[in-house]
Image (tube, rainbow, N blue to C red; front, side):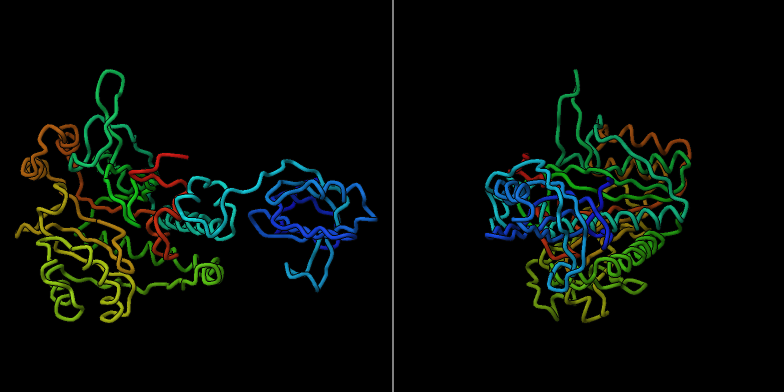
Length: 429
């Protein structure tokens, strides 16, 4: 008999179900068990006198043991789990579980030690269903617009971007590094004439940051596309992509997110509001109590970023906020600059947390080389500069951390939304 997932059971027929035992009420004449799989939960009801062989098996079961059960599924209005139950005719024990070393209210670091057990909860399973849907809808949006998916190497011969915060390793007889981002290779694809590309893959940052939003390895959703007129084209692509995906999340999981996380999925309107950094600082200092001493020339301070949540809601009635006109000293050398030297890029803030840095890139070799030299990168980016010697279209792009986006959507920490968290003090399991 083929296995039926609990959400797809056929009432009035014999079904085969496989999953974990979540609850056992083993009484003198009756036994009631709850079995769960990734789609739902099902009550099993056993008359022990009628099925003594099943009663003997039930006596051996423990919570979280794995079983295969077969029997008719019938309606029963007294059963809270969907008004149905199975009356098993056979129970096969696949594995017996030892007493669990954690529970739902255990501290997060202890739960991470036993992450495979922690992930069995309905709440944690939902995190990854939501993340899967977001990535799928981002992909769908881009594929409909003729983007090509690529996969760039994560072992690289030169430190990418700034050259700082990279993991160095031995690669046979020389040094190598784990990629901070696919940025250089995304731009190589533009020089190759691919025109529109995206990638979903791991990103590595050797930052000793112990915060609720930083990780040393996370999943990036990056894209790049050619023939842009300005960074406005890049912002427009991003806001459209996010506004495309979130209605699907709300429709499919909005009620469950509200039930399990207490969070409302808000579908954003277009366009997202935009503000220059200097104007934002003025607003936050004058109206939102930002200490002027926290002002960072050319960049947005952490407290300012946090205050963007209330400011954007008050000023624009919007959860998202594009911030532009950062200082050149605070932006990557490959960001295009205008005649006044202002980088043609942005940060996207969602609910008081930065989720994206995007920009139009500098595609002209001489200017790009000059900007790299200004940053003191020189030989470190020599291979990258080669991409621009033989003609390259104007282009731009951005990257979103899928983990961070999920974290903000569900109002969690980065440790909770990564399948296996990696931080300065965690390398296992």
